[in-house]
Length: 77
Image (cartoon, rainbow, N blue to C red; front, side):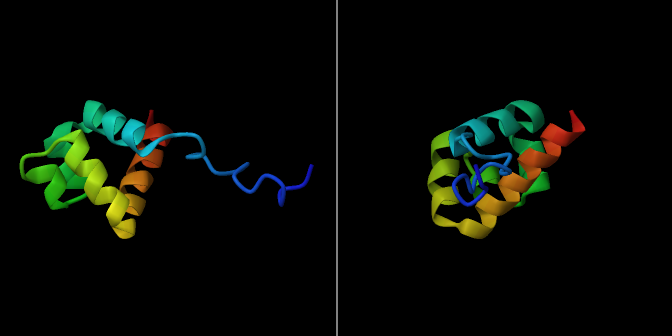
């Protein structure tokens, strides 16, 4: 099978939901550590998984930073 049939084959985030990513980051860093790593208001002002997901789904640049931090966390562990 060729990669054109499976474009997500080499994507380490394929199959991982944004909710899983945020939940695991919060468990690893805590809200304070997460806000320091990715300084956005949804992590610093009354943070919750739900409000973070709402913001990240509407804000591609922030989602990319969060996904990058998640990949870094996986590499470091």
